Image (tube, rainbow, N blue to C red):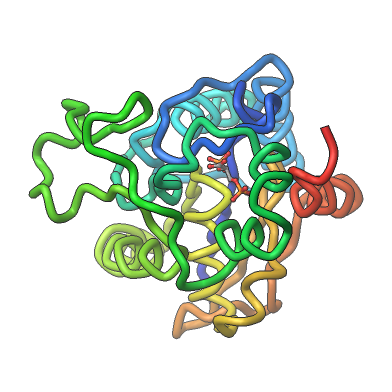
Length: 251
Ligand code: DG2
């Protein structure tokens, strides 16, 4: 009954979250609000006495910066950091850079929600040399071309994220470390789907707010003792989850 401690943190609001644009693998930064959310995320960790021993992030600056700011405000800036493309946001294909409200208006609610939240319908692929393509980005140069996505559905994210969960994160938990995972809306939805055993249908209804730590106590089999984990600021999380859900529907 010595549970493992895992904290999930979606990055603070990004410049493109604020503009309501599909982001995916585009490497946008936090805006001022997002920086504040990240700092507050660290304060919440400190207040809860949940001090990370190690942090895992994606290769994208909105998650990297969030981890840095949160750890600074928790006075844990010195802990080891591991980064992997496997924690990157879901690649949003040809939707990257497109306005969510405009996309909803143009294609209708059903198609829009299929692209945003269905488990296995990816958006159309993004051309390798398109404006918002990361295909030739040097940070992914070490990856074989077939692993560099041109679009992804959530199922694709689960498939590429899980090896990192088992090989990169679980060994740290097993060693008794409190682990912080600073990542993205959809890469974290993929992880929560696995942890909580959520069905392919029900995962459509799960949304993750920016900048609010979600703490999990895991049992010996790395299953949550409390299904869904615990947001460190439950009231703020509730409102923010609604806002993510309704993105696109209003300007
Ligand atoms: C958002 C998620 O990812 O968007 O790629 O636009 O977490 O990196 O800001 P994040 C994006 P939705 O799937 O919620 O529309």
